[in-house]
Length: 128
Image (cartoon, rainbow, N blue to C red; front, side, top):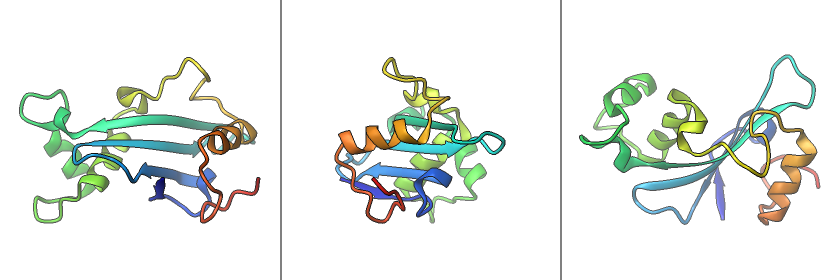
């Protein structure tokens, strides 16, 4: 099951986080429209591993936290993982797919992927 952390209209700013995530690995489905293009979106399946942001990892935890305005006291692992996808490119977290071009998707194709994954349209403002 996924929880919606984005807009109610998934196609405006979609952020679905798998509720069965571990303490450090957060699978997500992300969707962003191209502002100047009709029915054209970025849609990616990503996975943020917080271990990549430890001392020996490739990610810069402090930079991401500064970008988000997050402190150690306000640290939320889910929000941090989402912020990582905003700070770095989605393809750093596996958005590139052999099944589809994640940078050039139409709404109908995205809906088909969501239906295949049994993601209900409830609270996402999607009509099947």
